Length: 491
Image 1 (cartoon, helix red, strand yellow):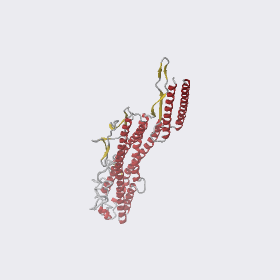
Image 2 (cartoon, rainbow, N blue to C red):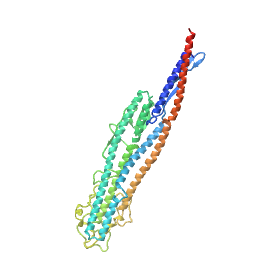
Image 3 (tube, rainbow, N blue to C red):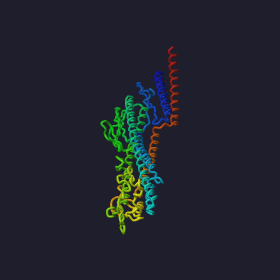
């Protein structure tokens, strides 16, 4: 090898190791940068020079490229599990809000209001001619109606907030998809060799995976397609299809133009849709809601129907909740009005009969005109344990003399079961958030093992390249001295 060739080898080594040190410095500078993947300078022996008859002679080292440490397998797993975690976080957050609205068990909840009304019926039964007892019954009935109105209104506000969150999330998804499309174009222009741009795109894909379930397909030139449910959200050519949300509850998610309905199976969007389904929708105050609001309406329907049926003209043959009394009440009291407005059979519309509310003497304590008759008040006082028809009950309680068939339950027991079931849903969502959090943390730890920057390892590599650089510099010095000797020999 000539002195000139030796100098070329030495200068190439200086350049290669200088760039390797630069890559190490880049790693150290970004050790705490979110989404950054460790980079490595790929060094390889340069193409050898043929020197017959000696064969091939090495020409030093060359920088082949910058490679980033990344695992597609761990990325896919993380996005899937993080999306499920976001799903249950959104669901749990909403259910926890409603649980706080119900505030059960407490002295100010719906159950306490029902108990107070039934207790006031019992007090009235013990002294049916006491006007104060009638006033207390009306006050407790109005308080129960107001409590149900308040709960329904606040749950409606939570449901509306879900719509606002859906709109905001869809806006973020579209912005993130646009960012991915732009990065696709930039990476293509760089020939696919752009580690920092690839990191930025993977970070955007991680964010997108927390919003909805996506499938990322590598097209081999550094660009990717992003699919949701078989539809192309982002194309490798840099195009996107925007998402949109329609409706005022229930909500419908759509993609593209013309829009096509989509049904995410994971991510925050799925959690918000599930949360709204759990709460349910209502079209008008008088119409039964769906979901949890529908179950509250079932409670109100059973309460209003049972109280009004008991508080009416005596006829046990057509009114199952009226007992067969012996002797039959006589003479029967005429002109008994409904206790509740018969049209208010939802949590949003339950109302004490305005005539009765204005004049508590309209409360009938007994079915007969006999002084001190307490048969109605006593029957109303049994509502705590009396099984009555409940539209949303799970089955019939045929052993009750008051109900011969159909879904039924004691009002208090039905509400307790309703709250308990809701509490189980809240706890289940909380447990899933915790378990998914552990799983996501484990996968993230595995990702960091592959792509994270270790300062200690970088310092070791830095020393290695520094020494190689120093040796190359010494080689330059040696080549220079050899050239000088040759020049001196030629004089």
